[in-house]
Amino acid sequence: MNSTNFSNLPLSNEMLHNLSEIGYTQMTPVQAQTLPFILEGRDVIAQAKTGSGKTAAFGIGLLHKLQVKKFRVQALILCPTRELADQVAKELRMLARFAHNIKILTLCGGAAFGPQLGSLEHGAHIIVGTPGRILKHLNKQTLNFEHLETLVLDEADRMLDMGFIEEIEQVLAYMPTEKQTLLFSATYTDDIIGISNKIQKNALSVKTVATEVANKITERFYEAPNKLETLVNVFSNFQPENVIVFTNTKLDAKEIAEALQKQNIDALAIHGDLEQYERNDVLVQFANKSCSVLVATDVAARGLDIKELAMVVNYDIPHGEETYTHRIGRTGRAGKEGLAITLYNAYEIQNALEYKSEHRIFEESSTLKKNHGFEMRPFFVTLVIEGGKKEKVRAGDLLGALTGDVGLSGSSIGKIDIYERQSYVAIEAKHIENAHKKLQNGKIKGKKFSVWILS
Image (cartoon, rainbow, N blue to C red):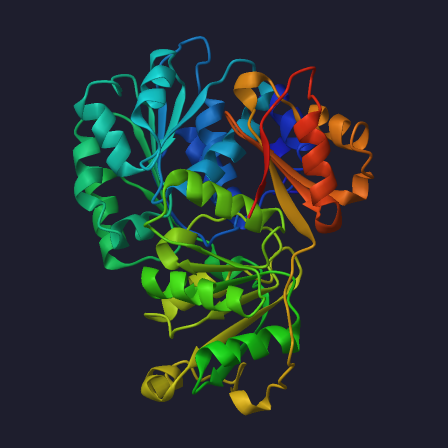
């Protein structure tokens, strides 16, 4: 008998069938070590890195005991960023397919408050959100945790780094004393242990980082008198399909993206000053391969769910080994080989030397060949349709219009993302003008929709 089979857990046949349908057959280390105790109702504090399967660990646990017929908030998952909250909610909805009418609601800052009020009036079983927005709803009495049974703090270390401890403590004041509390963190600092001692009871401690398969990542460091020039040379030498370039400040993110665009390298920036719709536009384009380079701050990039990332670049030396590990851990996933590049100038030499180790390659930027006229243009361009879930637009409707009326082949159509009021479709760049024109003048599901090219 394989002890990592989900079938060895006391789960319903419906849940096991759904897990099998979505490809969850064997538990990851964090799932195998935490789920039996989570299902018993124990408090758990677990150290597990991004991509370890922690969302499914707490998701299966809270869904297992959910009372679907009791339409009230029974579980809360607190996340540090909107992106992570969206990612968690998406996976929970997939795990929840085993039963009808499980409502999962996302409440995050940066989104309009009014529509969230409307959604809350219709009730929810599970809330996923950021501390500030959850607290705002509690203070306005538009959210009630009277019947809460499970609290999850996901990426708790990041929430502490971002200064959310005060908001978290205020949110806790609205909750019943008796509840199950699950805390997941990539690091195991004194602060994390401190908050666990404060909010958990006899918590089981699990550390799976050592047993997780390490990502296959080649780590290269370049001393670069001119970082922007070196960055372009890195791209031209290694020809990555997609890259995240990390910077330490919002201003740098914006300026680097603009500088790359001037050199015919398709780049977009994501940082805390963007409006929610702007963030969505940027993230959709990077995820559907309509943009090759994403320049990001650590906070803005937290929770990004990019399955296959060819390269990560540290434009600045990261503030500590933990941040460095978080950043480069986004590449080399799912058995693929990844490449992590770190640039440093004369002022950063001492900081760079602290990263010296036998498995890291240190080279001069002069070893990179210069490729004059190098460009990075994405294969796809994104088309936006002003209609989404509210208008009952489905992926099949868009595919039908594009392959039928427009005449595109399936290989010319990439990822389709459908949101509440908008849909995004990745179209092969050489067909984008034709697709835009025909959809603009045609109909989808018998209706006319506004259509435009996202650039």
